[in-house]
Image 1 (tube, rainbow, N blue to C red):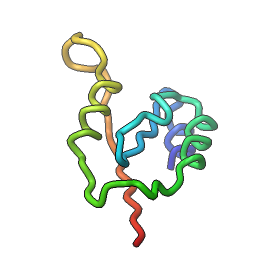
Image 2: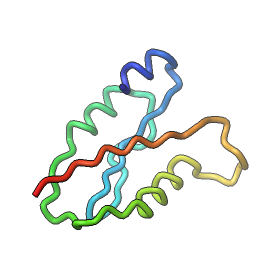
Image 3: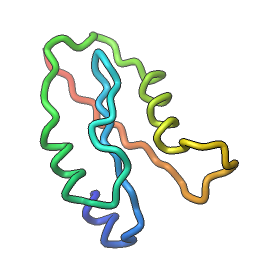
Length: 88
């Protein structure tokens, strides 16, 4: 998906945000597909993760990184793709 979107438009940016016990930015927004792929491959299972998913933290972190300033409406569209994995 990331590779396909970047070939359509090289200005597309992607970020990887991990939602677990803490919500952290693994890879800030970038056009570098290799960095995004490496960040995705580095993700693993967090055995200490909470049983519930807190999307409020995720949306807060996403907004901080997608819209860092008070310049009014952004010139781009930000879309979030949430990949949720769970095991017992």
